[in-house]
Length: 595
Image (cartoon, rainbow, N blue to C red; front, side, top):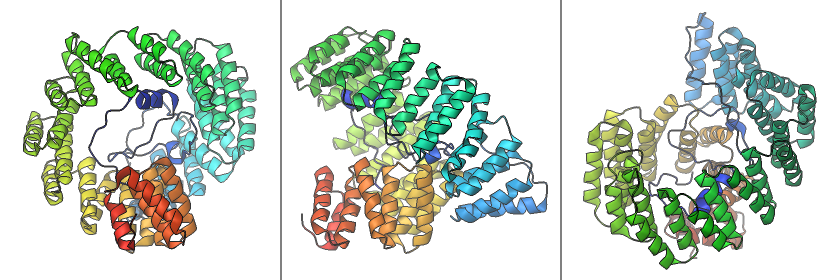
């Protein structure tokens, strides 16, 4: 489990932010209060640039259990929940499946499918989801879950039947085809998946439909055939040239294929189709700059409406271009401008000042944001900057004042931030105590419980860590962050390896592309002596996230397997990121290694 709970904020460059948002698939972070995963995200393995698809058009409330109709059913449901809380997801899945087959309540079948997916028991998941779809035939999520499980089992015929239902049920044809492309793109047999897609297209008469062509392009990208993906994207644009999402997708594909001229053309066309889209125009400007057209990029941004976020982006652009004089001139111009929303302007001015190293001005600007959508973020960032400048007491006082306005979000965030500031100053016990005070007021706050658990783990207080994380998992059984944190703690600080492995694997089933979870998969494999498997996971985790804790783990595995040269290389790479990382230093000290 890599450390992901620092509250420090980073001013993101124009290139890193905008190109990342528009050209690449969204990054997945493990949020402390993550909600239960939807069926698609539970099995996503998207390492390409294809966007993740979320179903809309259906709101799914938390599962409300109806009173069981028999003592047997009641016993099965309660037994399954107890087993799940104890970490035995396989047994829980079996009990829930029996309950689903006995009950006519679709919500019991839904829960059975969720637990089976968390346990990676795909046969049980398919049976439970099929039962769910039978009891709730118009429920889109039921058919989607069944399709996912059947694809995992290699039952392409059964999955095709479920996708037929999705196409019939979903009113939005574009979303339906995108969902199907996403599901099929995650399978290990693209040739079989392609046959299913072509069969569906033929049966529904959508071979020349622009949305279907776009979906085929997405499928081709997910299957690794990006040249075909670009060709299909161009066909979709030929059918509907005004569809901006098609044009942006083609631009992303061109970028991934290292065809900058085509990418520029497509993003230029997209910007022309939506001239008021600031993010798109700024991303286009950044692409121009990255291809040596800095002056055109500047002209593009200068021609936009000079609202606060555009001014900030122009300043960041000049900083990135190593033109500090121009950046300073723009900052002074920004300071003289008047805007309809002074709080929004002050927030962006503060970020610009921070990027230019004008710490006192940044703190002042953040302090002038007294209301509106940016007020909480500004107050939190101001406190962090005050603490970094040696004014911890003032920062704590301002955070305490923030808690007096009665807004729960502000109260929780202020406690979390203050505890992180205390932790950063070496006052870990006081930080935990502060979170204890906060939890007296909000005893079921997932964010507060999770943060306190991580701090307890830092102090090797396994019991307290487990208590808090078990409460989180009672509140949110599919919280991948909590499953991973508890599993890693047990793997790292106890010998309860089998239990740790079950927890980490449950987290991995929910978020298989999260670097911190992959790191934990590698670490439990190492602790159990599965060294080759451990190295594979840790190499993958390092590719996804150059975190020094991952480097520490990878180096240790390589060291134990006798590849000391590669181990030293891994540790040195981690030290380049953060030589003071506690896990890295502890590993080197324990092994008696000097870099």
